[in-house]
Image (cartoon, rainbow, N blue to C red; front, side, top):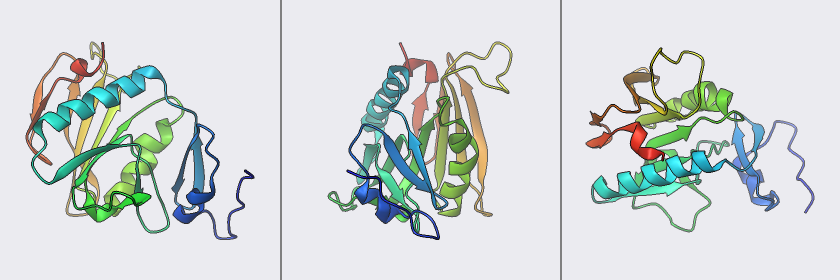
Length: 191
């Protein structure tokens, strides 16, 4: 299958329907096509174990999804994991932003800029109430003695920007209260 050509004004979420099934991950951010290599096992284990932990405490009427796009205008970013209303259309290509309560990104070397800078702005402007970022690899700004992975939990402020509510290193448990009560030690998510 040939790669589609974008319109003059950029890529849209609709263009993703025509991408090849080649093991790469395609998403649209601000009209730009972003292509990522398949994630590494550490990344996937963290997401899998986080998904299981969330499933265990999930309130009724919510679902945990991995690798599904969020529909935000013409964009379709794909968080590593999200918590959504169970009223979503299960056969749709993506989930409308207004149905999403939480997005989670696990930073890898190929997604650093998008996960730390671009996606939080896109998600916040779309009104998604909660954004969690996990740093499983050494990173600039890591505190002395801070064990990996580190969780950065954010809640949406009245100005549609995320406010950091918790910074939690492996070996420390914290109870988060938004979008629901959830106690986590980031260290429990990796072997």
